[in-house]
Length: 253
Length: 253
DNA sequence: AAGTGGTCTAGACCACCCC
DNA sequence: GGGTGGTCTAGACCACTTG
View 1: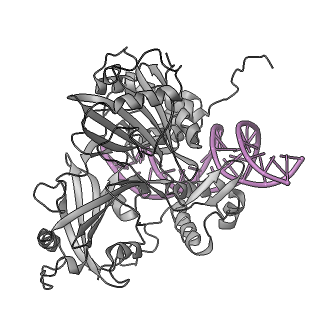
View 2 (view 1 turned 60 degrees about the vertical axis):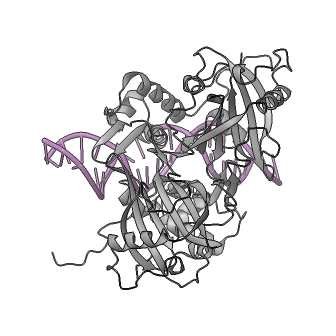
């Protein structure tokens, strides 16, 4: 078999298509520009619409495109760098944090949250909903679970489960002595509720940031923050202002 | 319009399917167990195979399933918590770090990397490839870019671009005074090369961790680490050993 | 009403793994 | 060779936005 292997590893059409489109986006389109619709694009490239969509989905996942039903497909702006540890060693709600309190209810958290908090399986905790925006657009939603034990002085007869109560819970939290926090980041898909808030469809890819706040030797609060994976780059440490991405693969020298 | 709205918001089949499967995984399957094949499952639920696949894809994205061509679909173990800032304020390659050097070449980095490093657009830099495994399975690959200026004493006539040279570069790096580092995490899709290394298909979802190491008032090294998004949970701070995930949505009390 | 992306179908063939 | 998941097709209909 001394023949030169041509097309011995035929890459999938959608993969090649994605590459072609990606290069076209770099050279021939500018941010915000709308692409031809999917049926036209598929015809132009001589593939089925489903195949084209596979390529578009990848590009959307990578934050290159933005698609909206009933509207069209546009070229997305570069990802937003959102700082995840603004005000290191500070409670949620401390002055200068990027979140906005939405509301607060008392409810029984999921079992895994109760485990982390060390509360009983049927014990309700303060559940604060907050949201985070960037130039007017929502980029993240958060559920902050605060056991009653962490805010003992909060009067039970407070505002009826609204933003005012959320702020009251956050205010009370500041009185605790924050000893430390640890975080985890993982890929998830948006729950129906979060998707609505983030202006995405259910199941959209999101980055789930879990933060445990430690005080008085236990987990005093637990935050589950859901960031839009297509538009956000989570930054830790400082600035994170530089754009870096993998380029085309190159030969070694 | 006083009628009660029934089915006014019909959820997509694949979404419902995903929920059903997810509950079945919790109650009727154990880790490592293999599921019926896609054709059987689709028939059992009375949907087309493509629809079933949409549900399976989501569950795989969430780390609940593992699918391998030619083999089958199995129930995935819980995600692995991988510490991203082991040995805080330490150079890559410092004792105890989790990475294993693979090789090292000198090549011109992508333009965005050159920008971050402040090197010329055609200036080759040391490009160290490393990999990270967890119980024998690859979980991440890394490209570490080190400008010649950061390792001035490295003799140019070193080992011919192999693991030995990689270790030599890392060793030289330790002599610099590390002033700080900053990180960013974002969703990306695996390049062909990384996908092979991670035992995934090209385009698989990955978490891209970009770390800039500062020394002598500039960026002395730049790391692009690619983690399997399906199997990894990135932890920052300390342990991160607790399992936390969103449960089913509940009513407020 | 017209046009967009989102969902779904019923088929076909391919690449890969294992027996 | 037989079974698996991965790719691809050519259609259809639906949900949503906009003029």
